[in-house]
Image (cartoon, rainbow, N blue to C red; front, side, top):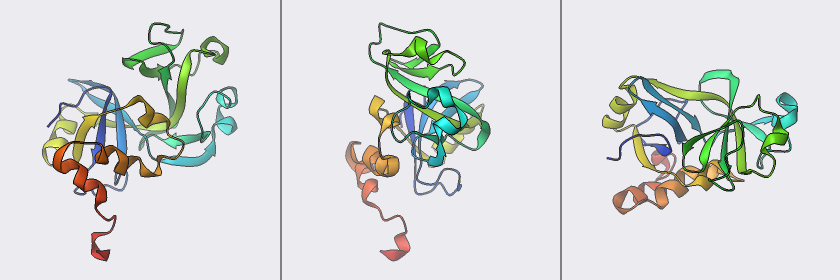
Length: 185
């Protein structure tokens, strides 16, 4: 089992039945003794970014919609970005892992122009209290796997769950071929 830390992915296992997380891929943004915080990468909404955050409409990757980051605080927004050049850190950017990080949405968009290779905005987040995530991993609810920067910025996130599992070594890749409804098998 890989340690859950910022920059890693949580991939829901078939044992995870919570409707908030079935077949999700969560990017961990912060993990410490107090708990963990991340965003669901594969739940786009139908709400266009320009409808709620007009200034950011032209800066986000396609699809240009808000993503449902998780069940906690859905009225708030988090912006996940990847830098073009990890050595050129603009104002308003906080690194999570390497060139991947968070953008402060109060930063004027103009100050970030040319600095970002990808940007996605999430309404809400997924959160766990102290040791809660470790317990869920131990009970078999999550696979913890390395992330690739492109995972958060795919044009079509519908196959992200399968694609992330498919690239894993050993038996974990086999889970990518399981039917969504085993009763139909």
